[in-house]
Image (spheres, rainbow over the protein chains, first blue to last red):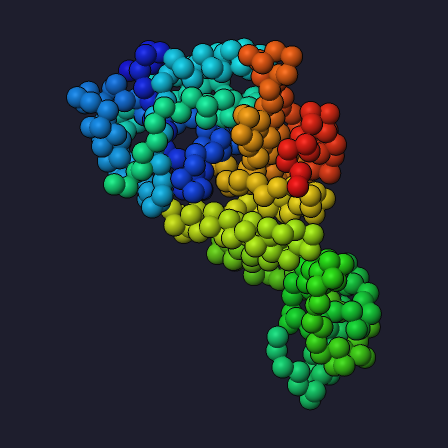
Length: 140
Length: 234
């Protein structure tokens, strides 16, 4: 349901444009907000009810391909919710408490958002980069 | 560049004079005749700036048709006089021209040895953006200009990793083997946001993390106390 907190043990994915992963290396810019964005768009893997990580990633690939044109070298990064929250809480000067909330869209039921990133977004983006668990290509 | 046709000289200057009367001095720029190339009807201001900057950098700028302009004391800038509204396509084309110009100027920076590589990275990023959305601006022009100015002021730095933020701004990073990080987000208003991580030598289990905002011209002196130049300068 919209606004539900995603449990710390769950995993989320973030779409990284080719320009945010030059040479296949994810850059902090992948975790930055647009000027008018309130939250960082992610997908809640647990919501997809798949049997394993591989099928979760396959499902996320289909969602991305249906929603927008995917660049040839675009990446999917996997993050653990609790690890991201803990890292940012412990290592930001203001002990930032991020919220990771379910934010379903009509064409993307697992869509979610990381909230409370706005101030010092660059520092937080660098910290989130350090928590990346896995990287996959969007195009198989 | 159009070919000079001497017979049409007076026709061109006559039009100029008519324009100066019609619009008053508001749009008139006094101009030594040998100083401007003949560019057609518009965009003289941009070309003039380009010429000054390129000349300053020691890059030859081809001025043509000066003989034809010898009797003209005044040229009008028709940019503001154009009554046709710009379309989105016009704006995009103009932005793309500016992006290409800045990439060209980065490639021509004299004090670097990796300017080719940097220019190629920018072209690749531009192509990545166009691949996903052909109507995208690609790289934010003002951020690119800001980045170019930073490079000119700091020619002694190692080749950074560059990527684009969701707003198409340039994000440059330097990373060292011992987990040192220095990143700069080039904003569109001559400002930057920066982040640096470095080991805390007295408390090895801790890291020093600093972030802030500085104008591009004083950024490096702002971060100097953190020993950044020890590992990002060549």
